[in-house]
Image 1 (tube, rainbow, N blue to C red):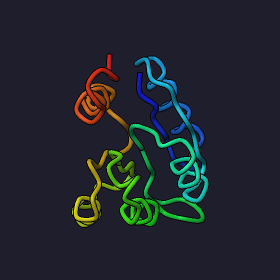
Image 2: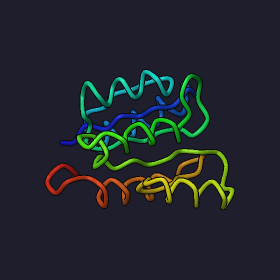
Image 3: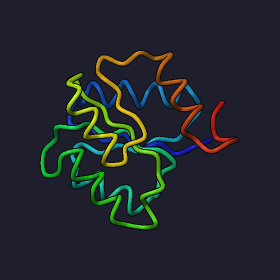
Image 4: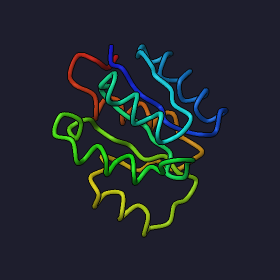
Length: 125
């Protein structure tokens, strides 16, 4: 079982993703903004992070930048969540070091494939 952190200021999105992750057999952590999400990463060191792009306090790019600057955290797979499918944002996310970029609404089969691809062997069902 892996621990997955979901950082998103939209309660319904966060709750739905957390519910899905629990059904997939993973432990979850939640944060409603970038600042508390970064604190959760530093405290709990999750196995995977799903992070919204546009949030209060710190946006997703700022969260990822802070993680990339920390040698103990930059190896954690980081997946951006966004309602925007703009090619420039996708390119910027990947150049900054994101593992993937998922557009909302989510495709659950796609999320399941990402879990298998990004989590350490033995932590996915």
